[in-house]
Length: 112
Image 1 (cartoon, rainbow, N blue to C red):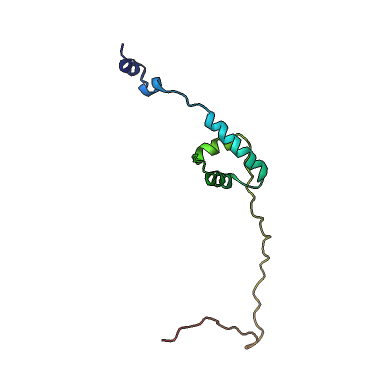
Image 2: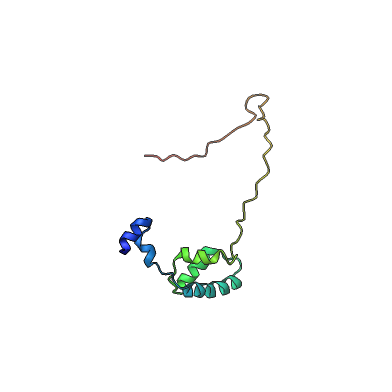
């Protein structure tokens, strides 16, 4: 039976038959470059490290670097902004009699 017919019978793409796994040599090289950067710059997140690697003339895809970066547990937690306490709303004071309070409009208008 031909390969094409066998793949049709099992409803499998013929590319599955010819697939070859890539070696992890580049992954090991990425680990060797990322680990010293992480030890030297502990406050750097993923993107700073990725840009540094790019500046060092490594042309790895950011998705590949991130795939290796996350199992190494180098992720930094997101520091959230602290919430301000709720403002106490007070009623506006009404003047007791006219001309007690004044206001001024400080907008400038252009003369034509």
